[in-house]
Image 1 (cartoon, rainbow, N blue to C red):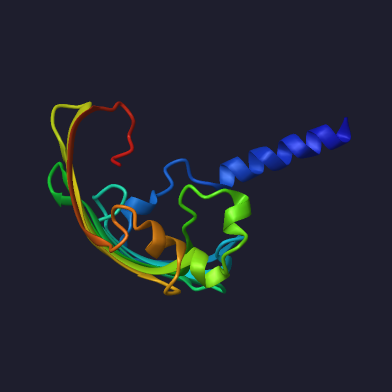
Image 2: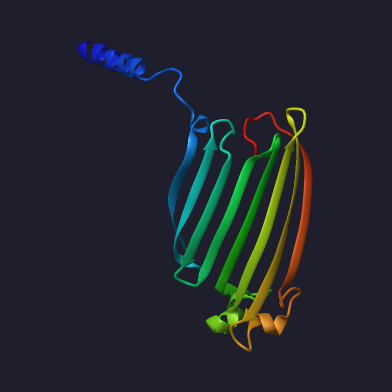
Length: 201
C-alpha cells in the first residue's frame, strides 16, 4: 500500500513540474542539427556503414519546420554506395511544399543471372556473374493543399544508369537483355489525394 501511494505521489509531482503548455519544437526559433549512424548487412553488399546528418531550421510558425537540409554518406564492404542530398521546405509557399533530392548510388558487384539455372550459374566466376553500375538521380516533389483534406501532389525524377560488365564473357554480355547498356530514365507522376492525417507527406 505504501509503495502504491509513493508511486502515485511521484507521478503527480512529475505532472505538476511539467508545464501543460510546453513549447512544441516547431514553435521554437533557430537551428537544430541531428545525426543518425547507419549500419546494414546483406550477403550481396556486405556490411554497410554510413551517417545521415540533418539540419532543421525553425521560424516559430511553420509545421513541422521551415526547412530541412539532409546529407547521407553510405558505403559497404562489397562496393555499394548510397549518397544523398535533400532539401525539404514544407512551407515553400503558403499551402505548398517542395522537396528536392539528389541521389548517387553505385554497385561494384551487382548480380545478373538471367534465366539460367543454379547449375549453369555455378559454372561462371564471380566477375562473370556481376556488373558495375552507377546511378545518379534527381528527384522533385511538390504538394499543394487544396481544401482540406484534399491535396495535389506532383513530382518527377530524372536518372541515368551506367552499366559495365565485370568480365568480357559475362552472363550479362552473353544474354544481352534490354537495358544492358544502361540509359536515361525520366518519370512524371501526379495524384489527387484525400488525406485526413496531419502528416503532409
